[in-house]
Image (tube, rainbow, N blue to C red):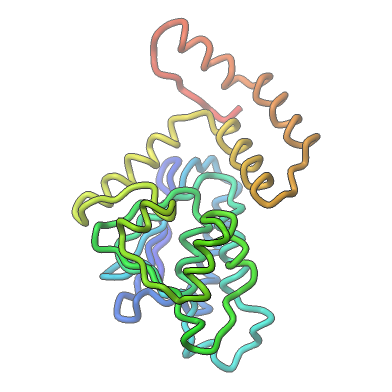
Length: 247
């Protein structure tokens, strides 16, 4: 259902159920969380999540969850794990983004997509209330009025509109998507990981109105005292690329 690999400083997760628009089974969601938990102890610096086929993800597999406990939707902790992962996560949206797949995409730090991409969240047409955490994430990322259009109107969006409204950072032809995702991941991997990961945490806390100022100040002090800061200054003086170690 998924492929998860870690090579060097970059983790890659591919959703492999194209016949079902990459709808996630409980097992697949567990595998994704397990991969992220395992990578958290490594020197990982970026993650790419993408899918096979014409769709990126259609959220949780409803045929499996239909009789489940909706107070414990397994997609909710998975999206929280993606959003809170220590390193930046890139969603390489290879096709349609539907239902809970929208929450998975919004949990990522960056979203790039193909020009044929479409986005649609159907709960209002199915008598379903979308997960509150997912609605909150959409409001944080896209604003309340865009969230109303997504959830209350069940409006369908094309790629250009998603770029305009900030759902997407970039649009690319399908054949260029994978290379661009790798380029972004390599860019992130070349930066100072303590600084990148610390600022990711500060941005996330700020967006959720729970910024821990003392903890953020501690991250600032740690970065100034780090070997990577000294390396960055030396590289600037010597006019050469920096080689950061995460220390």
